Image 1 (cartoon, rainbow, N blue to C red):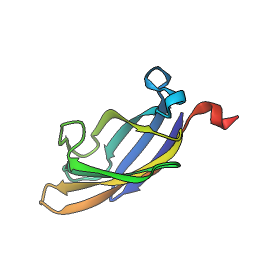
Image 2: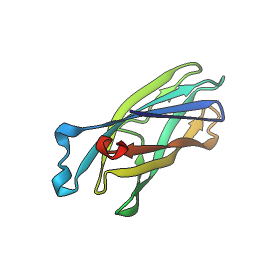
Image 3: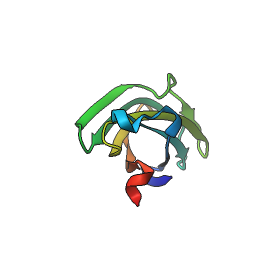
Length: 129
């Protein structure tokens, strides 16, 4: 399990990753990882997550981007001191990769701002030996 954290404009984003052996098939170069993200509003204004942009780096597959509205079908609203958690995943061809990105958020005054999603690594556990 890997962990990463970033703080941008009073929004804390923490990520934990896990290798999903049950869904993976290393002999077919198919490695699945899940990641759990916690978003904490440490500021004094209500905010809403509107969009996400991901950059997925695979050691054998270059970089691919993923973007869209919200996360896991939601555009959560976080009042001051509230948090939101979700789990998602991605697959890699090499068993070694990393992800990073950002959220576009809006505060209660309709000010748009960008929140960093920290870079985190995904490694097929036997590669660590």
